[in-house]
Length: 407
Picture 1 (cartoon, rainbow, N blue to C red):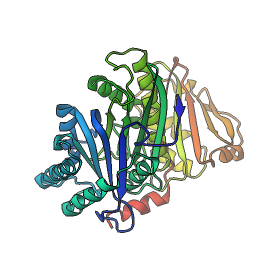
Picture 2 (picture 1 turned 90 degrees about the horizontal axis):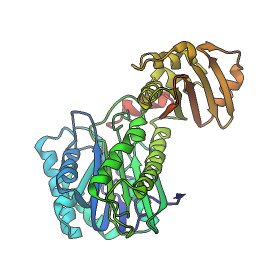
Picture 3 (picture 1 turned 60 degrees about the vertical axis):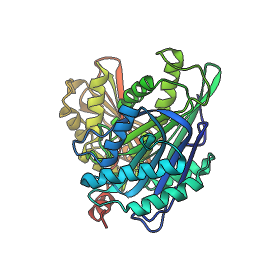
Picture 4 (picture 1 turned 120 degrees about the horizontal axis):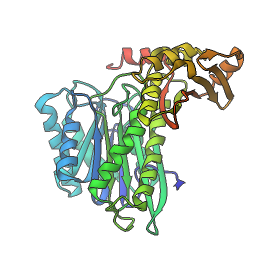
């Protein structure tokens, strides 16, 4: 597997664009279009929140009923959530407009929105933006990068990733982009993610691959404990790499899943590190677990702990908060067998051995915790399973950003 520069346009046959349509922001791109030259098999996973935005409901129909897609329209600034029947009508009108401009059926057009809940979309600007986007479509990196910029809200930087692998003697590419900075918590997080591939694979296996991988990537991210109304991850495969069709769980399928995992994990970590107000990516790795589920419960509990996140912000090796978060996770373990370490580019230090603090240097620990990426490693000595969760530190800026988000 090779990591390459690119995002949603890295795979053969995909084009993208991003423009400023004035949906809510007046000084930046806020609409994106993703288009495949031919129809794609499509897979998707969506928010577990009972309150679902109109675009989520629209896309679920496309994924579960049509099972094919050729275009995705995305807007930032307004979420089109809690907007009643009008919100669904906006989805229909946007899909119809994109279908007319691109000459594809409207039920093969996916829509996605992110931003403030409760506001109605300016559908006139949406439709005008689609006209401009269609004329700006390009298959080069710049098109994908413009699209990645256009889907941002409180994100401070665009998030893109791409890899290539060999399947059946053909080079296959998987690329993606995502947005996510706040209102992010495990169980589909709170994010928009769009992944493209030129692999030839059945829709059934594409859906299974995505659902399985989301559990170990996006669902292991937490910024603030809030699960959004708009969470959506879409995966489109157009088959233009012309590899032998993946129709069973063979070696090619496993290789494809590895490539998909690499892209999704990279994007997930980008979101965690760009959490609202964050100064550091905070990773929690639990090892020595008796099951994968146990390791996931423990790691997600720690990475979601507000007290632990605040300690990371203060570069404070407050291990009691970590052990406490593990204790209320719902996973059973023996706290008197836990070893705990902190690790970063500045080094690695043991904080706890068999549940008791060791004689460590607070100064050295603070130095390690001052890096832009910090990892806490908990060894519970019960087995051979492990899991990793990703989050960020909790800063005063998080409150400032969310105190006036609607304005």
